[in-house]
Length: 128
Image 1: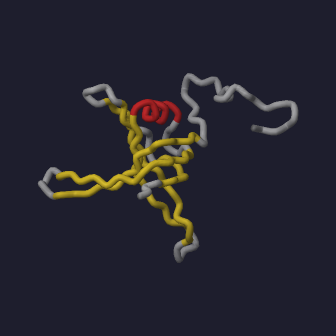
Image 2: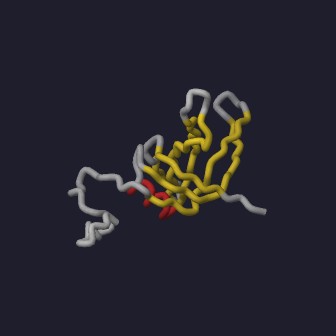
Image 3: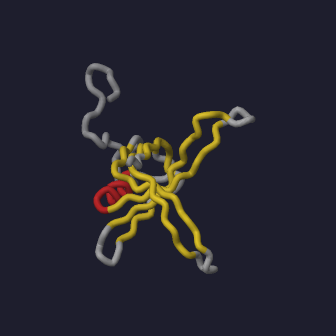
């Protein structure tokens, strides 16, 4: 059996980082992902997909990602059931991240604007 999801999109909100009573970090965010085809108006519709990460990956996401940042997520689809405040049974789909690639660097207020990888532009003119 195989349950694998790969997504590429932009964060629709800031990362919500919380810790369980046992001290396990959990990060939640929503990834806005364009659909592959255009609608009748010639624009791409967007799916908003909930993503959850745990432990060290959760903390790294909270540190390096923010609203509007591009990210690639690899993980598995999870469907969970819960009861809402009115007692109705609900289902929620989310991607449990196994790997997250930070495609944009979120500039923090205390950041001087330096290259996050410490590489800078070389003499050869290649920007990466």
